[in-house]
Image 1 (cartoon, rainbow, N blue to C red):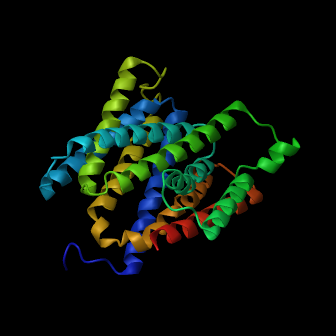
Image 2: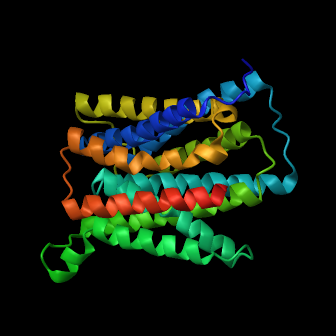
Image 3: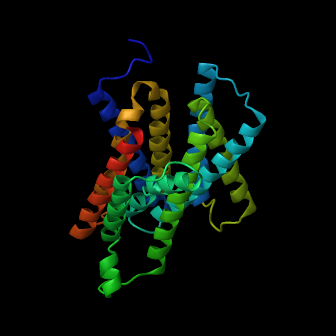
Length: 303
């Protein structure tokens, strides 16, 4: 069988589901690592470094050229910096609020992308798209238990607010990165673009760690559990990211991409099983609304 021949759809869906679960597992491992005093920048540095080595190997194996047009380098640098900020934000959110909620908030990126595209002269969101956006935001309100907070039935602590704000910022930044990818770097080979992006993330994390701008950002884990979690974080992210790019030509991403949106659901299940992070029935209901809305929105985008 040719290496570019698409997998049967059920195989492609299973692979993408496994990739999404692996990304969710990476965030579960990150939370365990952070709970054992692992530095956030250290986690970013290790994750980016190991995955970067895999992508360098892929670029060499595929004999991809690194010759880019002069203006492309600027956009590529900006893309890498945006992904570095997004990585920092999502890990900061995961460290403060339940993993499933952090992933739900970060998955607002398609809404920000649609609005950004419109603001920069692209197509205006259709009525059905606008309704889906409203449905997603409504579901997110229930997922974050906003009604209980507003009624005073539950307290809002500073870490909860910080976690939500980090998640929203990560979603907005990721939307900007997606816009640049689609509109300024679409002609670049995906493997080269991803390799250069992770190179920037790695360097930015190393410089931030060396400068000491984030106290404790490069702290080593204080227990074996932290070291194991850090290793799992690197393995799960690297395996998922690498599999996605090695098999991308056979996965029919345009048709099957919505499967990746099960990541928050996987985060919910794993967070319950491993971290004992329990959500209320209303929060779970809201989360299902968010995931359903994002899947429908993604289907419309790829249609």
